[in-house]
Structures are given as C-alpha cells and as structure tokens.
Image 1 (cartoon, one colour):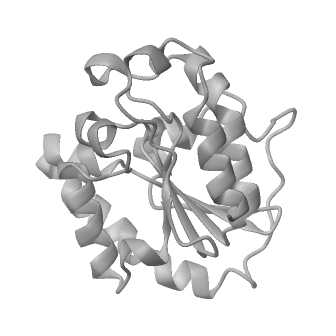
Image 2 (cartoon, rainbow, N blue to C red):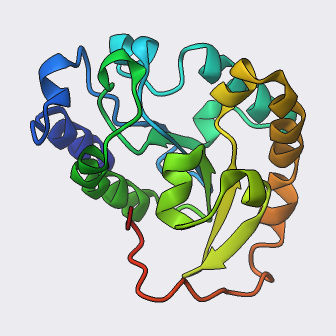
Length: 199
C-alpha cells in the first residue's frame, strides 16, 4: 500500500469535527501520486459526498473540460479539497474545520510534492496568498520553496456567474507555459510571519 493510500485510511477515521457525523463518505482526493500539478478546491459537495471522490458534480465536469483545454486528464493531475467532508447544505467551511483538516492537506502536498499548486477559489487561495483578493490575483503565480502557487477562481463560480467563464478559461491556458518556465522563475519570499496554512 502506498503512503497516500495509508493516509486515505487515516482520513476516513477522522472525527475531529462534527462534519464527520453527517458525511456519507470522506473525500480525501485522487489522482496521480507523482503529479506535477495539484488542484486544491474548497470542500466536497453532495455528489462528492455520495461517491467519495472530488469534483464529480457539475463543477467537476467543467474542471474536466478545463483540463482537456491544456491536454490533460484528471488521472494526470492530483485533485483535493481544503476540507475532506461535506459541510451541511454546502455552506462555507468554518475556520475551525479548515484548521482541523489542514494536516491532511499538508501531508498530501508533502507526499505528492507537486511542481505547481493551483488554488481553486478563495478558501484554498487564502492558505497560500493570505490577505489577497481573488478578483485581483487570479491568473497570477508566485514561486516559493521551489513550488509554483497559482490562483484561479473555483470552477463552480463560472456556473453561477457566466461572466467569469472567460477569465477561468484564460487562466487555465496559462498553466502549461508557467510549468515549463518553473525552473527559471525567481523565488519570492513568503509574507512575514506567514505559516503555510495560516487562515
């Protein structure tokens, strides 16, 4: 069994917060264990909770289309969420829930060691770009500790606001060239007193 599979088993046993009482299934994440690109969303929705897989509802179908636009399939990347269990009614995750789950995401990042982390939506963005506004930094990247961090709107945003679709699709198209240039892009210092998973 791989280290990632063992981690999934640990996550399935997690009862650190009340979300565990209401979940149908834990949604740890899925994809290539050696993926160069890791996409991090917000939290599982109804479809994800039923199947135990990330991004399998309407937003997931759109993410598949976005990946296809840069000649990738979901099997070639890694997809996870900040929160591993569905918040009731698809509400926003609470700060305590984000803190409880952050160790799982941190370990996934360590095991996969992606060249690029793509944040999907404001909750994952806040972990790596604290204090920033997604409307201002989407489509921009920073390199820290030899990893590229790239901010995008959540695919679900385009389903609710058609006006964002063009921006999301344009941002996705930048990923291959950024990845190709990753070795030559200059490192940036993280903000002072920032821990990687500060919320």
